[in-house]
Length: 201
Image 1 (cartoon, one colour):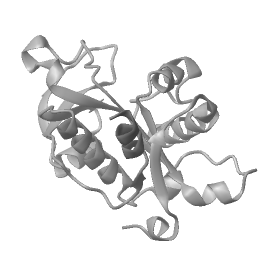
Image 2 (cartoon, rainbow, N blue to C red):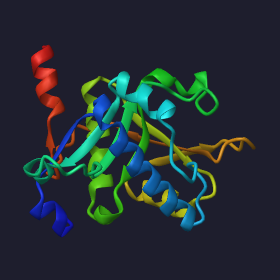
Image 3 (cartoon, rainbow, N blue to C red):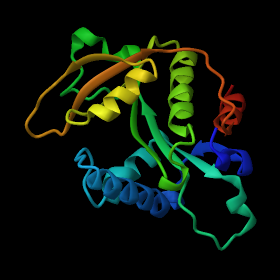
Image 4 (cartoon, rainbow, N blue to C red):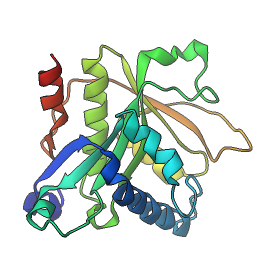
C-alpha cells in the first residue's frame, strides 16, 4: 500500500451537496490528466454540475476522504477518490439478454493524482463488489474507453472479464466488463456507509 494510506487515515462516505465543488475539481484534474495520456473518455474540463449533482441527490456518489483534512477547517481539499455505484445499466451498452438488474454498476471512478498507485482504485472496486454481494446481486459491472487498452488491462488484472465492446460513434466508452460479486473486506479505508445501513435496519 502507498505511503499516503499509512500516514493518512481514509474514510468512505456518501457525497453531500456541499461536496460538489471538490468533486468537480477532482474530475477536472483527472480529465486533464487523461487527455494528456491521449484518453478521451471524459470531457477535458471534467463534468458540469448538471452531470454530478443528480448522483449526489440520488445518494449514489461516494467520496473517499483524507480524515486529516478535518483538522484544518479552512482546508477546502478535494476528495482523495470518488466512485458512483448504482443499479442503472446504460441501455446503449447493456441489453436485456445481459439481465441488467443482475448487477451494480460502477461509474465515475477517479483517484486524485497525488494518490495514484496507492491501491485505492483496487480497494474501491472490491468495495463495489462487496456492495453488490450484500444486495444479493451476482455481478459488479462497468464500461470504459474503447481506445484505452491500458485501462482495459487494469480491469482484467483485477478479475474483470471483458463481455464485449460496443462501438458507437458518439460514445468514447463501450468496452464492457463484469466481475462476480464477492464478500470482500478492504482495510484501505473506514466504510462510514456501514453505519447508515445499521441505522436503517
